[in-house]
Amino acid sequence: MSGRGSNPIVLYDGVCGLCNRLVQFVLKNDRNDVFRFASLQSKLAEQILVRHRLRSESLETVYVVLDYGLAEERLLSRLNAVVYVLQQLGGPLTYVSALLRVLPAPVQNFLYGLVARNRYRVFGRYETCPLPDSDTRCKFLDL
Image 1 (tube, rainbow, N blue to C red):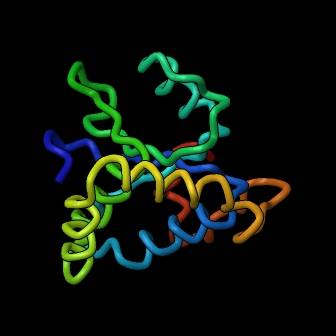
Image 2: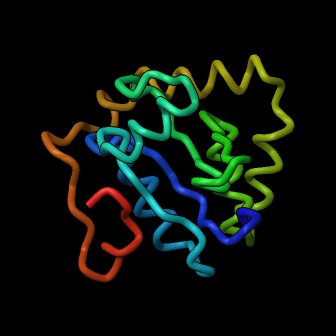
Image 3: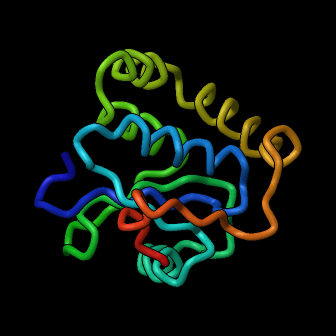
């Protein structure tokens, strides 16, 4: 799935209602226990983003970290990250990821930007990052 034994890490905005729904969706559909999670507000996310010369205070995107901690570590962002997650979850979601992947880049960027700009207004915002339940807590690397 991720290559060399390290689980892909989803970096998400921990106070965003949409991002938290995405995390819950992945937890529910990750039948092969592939993904781990860390909020963008965490020290772990900050270290990863700094290593990739990105601003850690920027919360407008979701990232997937592949090959975490290895020399070939890389980040997928925005719709590329979402497509990767959907592909890894498999089943009918593979078709959704294929449809998203064939959209021209300007359309992908427009759609992602539209959702990102309106996510707090439409999906709400938490005062603090919600804590996972005891069954899934081990999948969160920033607790």
